[in-house]
Image (cartoon, rainbow, N blue to C red; front, side, top):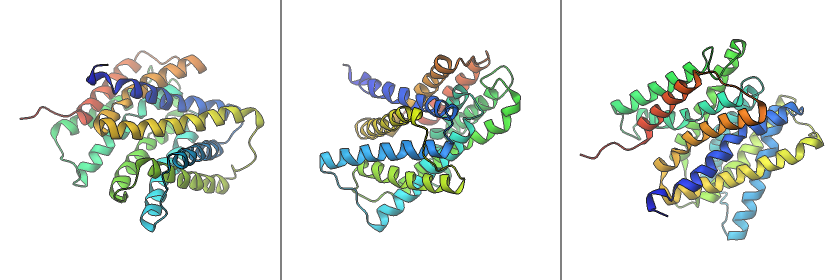
Length: 292
């Protein structure tokens, strides 16, 4: 395979898995599973799988104070809070609309890094972020990916999900201990996030024995999440963050496809220009500019 095409297969698989997450959640919610129970079960399954992978590869998951702080903060924003917001909103908004929100995460990450002095703020990135936000606002309008205007408050609530992911990205970089294997950090983050999700579920009265008929789907979601984490960190190591962030395009497309195939969602014609604005914004924010 040509070197330029090597990142494509893992990104396609990663985008397909992440694009299916809203479908898993909506299926389990229809079966009577509350949002945070879904997050807790899937997180526990994926954490156990990654612990097994670490053990098989002889990779230790450090438990120093610095590592535990990293796990706790990354898990809080990247799993517990993000799932609390996203999985709750998915009971009301279409899976296809939710997938349009995913590319906001890398945009907000780059913008936040610029505001914190971690990245250079450029006019191109400001324009890209504005285009992405315009695309999401267009997706909320009548005739787009949000067919029922009565769920607009839940759509706005769902938009906090990429904010949580962006906060997790920024804080993880700031708090990441030096020399820690990425797979170990992912495993510790999943374990901490699952524990926090279980606490949220208990406080909300959502922690109970799940219905048996949903267990196979929950186990499949957990296995898919574990596989996605392994692909994600492997892609980061092999191809870098800029290339890996382009999976946001694929998540949007596959999310819309899963919503149509599994739930019969029929987005309006305005979904096309909305997705185009989101894609253009993502490209301006994440793709490198021309070198002088």
